[in-house]
Amino acid sequence: MSETSPATSCNSMVEFCQPWRVLATAVFRLSSREGKGVLMTKVWVCDDEPSERFPIYTRGNVSEVFVEAVSPLTWSAYAPRSWELGWRDALCRMGAFTPDEFKPAGDCEVVGCFGGYVYLNVSLSRVLGVRIPEMSIEAIDRSFFGDYPDVPPYRPDPRDENPERARAAGEWLRSLFTTTELPELAEDEARLDRLVDSRPDLSRLSDAELLARFRELRAENRYFFAKHIYMTYCSNVVAAVVAQITAAAHAPEMAAKVTTALDIPSARQSFEMWELSRVVARSAVLMREFDAGVDGLLERLLDSPEADAKQFLARWAEFIDRWGFLGASIWEFRSVTYASDSRVPLRMLDRARQVPDTAAPRERSTVLCAERDKAIKEIAARLSGDAEARGRFLGAAQAAEVFLPAREQTKLNCTRMTEEIRANLRELGGRFVDRGVLVAWEQLLLLLDDEVDGFLDDPGRYGEKIADRQAGLELLKSKLPPFVFESEPPPLAALEDRVKEPEPAVTSGEQLIGVPVSQGVHTGPARVIKSLDDDSDLEPGEVIVAVTTDSSWGPLFLAAGAVVCQTGAAISHAAIVARELGIPAVVSVPDCVERIKNGTVVTVNGSTGRVTVA
Image 1 (cartoon, rainbow, N blue to C red):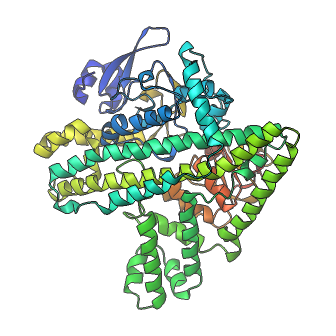
Image 2 (image 1 turned 180 degrees about the vertical axis):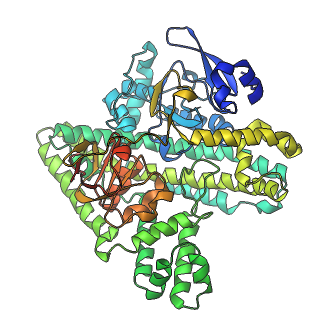
Image 3 (image 1 turned 30 degrees about the vertical axis):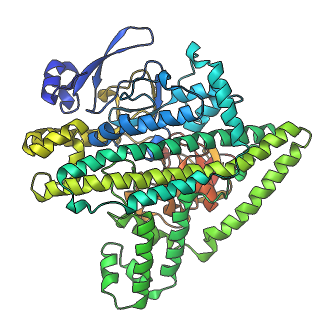
């Protein structure tokens, strides 16, 4: 499929793309399930062709790390050669697939970009529900969708059944429940440390050398991403088994307790942020400076002669050194991080300093650990008459302690790896800003991977293309991609605007129902947060209401009384961190972001999944 210029594409497709000239970059023909040709417009320059074999895609889970529309360089350079191949590596390691079941290398199928947004392939993961013994399509769907409505049904394909792969997947499944430790995690952290520590002085590399290093890191990224996807499937299966057995024991609410207080790595930054907040709360000097606002805060503290200011700055530097790679939409290469823009973590710290000492998360963790042990003993006692079920449950509970933290650790590894990749682009793009070619370094990412070499040789040739794509990216960011689609991604004209007519507000006494993922009950005013830029007004005890959250949101949970998300499942970020911090959470609550208004008092029941309006 050849690429054409935006102008050429629009001239040939006037009836489709005249209102959105900069986006309609190519036209391609797909085969529907009935084998008929369907004419479609490629909305974004790095959009993929949907899989005919595996036709259902979702934003579930991936919207945590790719929140906004993806940049062309991010996707074209790393999706087909790193993320796609890493995911395939994980599926083959499980024994559930063989390499010849996928599209040829270089074509995306497990992951995909459609309308500028990143999607995961659900159909392919559903095959695991067929091939893995004792798993089900429903369990796979629940890990992606929670209770999200209108999910396309599973349509059996003769190729889904594969006795040889089922046997191999069965061996993998049995191995999970006898695993007590994963030494490879420490080895991977050491491997990543060596990579980061060996980073050359990027300012001394030539433009071509920076671009080469950016591309060379694809292999390492594939390795770490494959490990993360493998651990994700391990944790999904383990969590599903825990949920199945606790439900069979007539105690479905116990599943959340069994998967609580596991020392999840992604929650550690929240604990460190809490300790920093205590440093601030106990210092009149620091409290006064925070009261003056976070804008210019670090500069004021640098100028301060006070010992408390110096102590805080030292602690802050340590925090950023450990966690500065985090940020919103964190696997997108153009994204800002804690290190590049300190305002976001400082605002979260500003909220946390106002929380009383009695809300210390470590103390809550001690209670949660005891409740977890009690829940495991109670379920085991209920299963005392069924030795096989009891053994499976205890094995799954043990496996949860191993694989759920592993999933989060490997996700953090991927995020650190992303920052290592991003550093090359930041340096390279920054040079073209200094030369007066680009306005911002991030504009470099508006090019495709196969265009960057030409840009280095003659950047002037790409000025119009970059401007057009910048306009196109802004338009895509104003649209809401569908959460799920089958076979054909919707055209741009069918996408909803992010700013639209408000949904009817919830009314007193109304109940919204979702998936309970972290136990407890809390009543407080709602605070709707659509991005971390919106968090500045969060008051202690308020209920966070969001579409989804990611690892950069963790410290914000310190001030929250509860969390409600529009999407998500039992091991999505909001669920995992809420359990670690001991606050109630409900996910997969339809339309909650549109219908719950700021200040509306709600009661969140993390055991029943009910969000009740006062």
